[in-house]
Image (cartoon, rainbow, N blue to C red; front, side, top):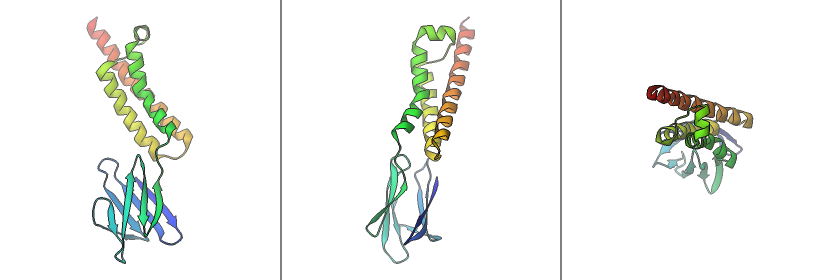
Length: 161
């Protein structure tokens, strides 16, 4: 994830964070900062800046006593949208009347599939800004989860017959 912030004093601040490893890098006015530790960087004048937070909880850059927001915190509706794939497999897989209509694998397999697509949905939802696109990503994650779990459910029913 890459964020570019325009600041009146420091110029262009480029913040990059790898979602998978958590590795961070900061560039101020085209000059990459020297990394001191995992969350601290050294400016050209010898002062240090620190980064608080991360991708999901939001991140702030503390520079010379000033705190600049780099990424916003996760919002409640983003969490709700991401829970739908997991909830679908848990609820549908445990209601036999629904499984009689469309067999959907639940339990550990369905929960794992729902959990993976919930996490992927959260990553993609957090990466985009428009709310309509967040909803579209959540629906796509839900549809993919339903399709995979439905395919496994039909395979289980066919194997048992």
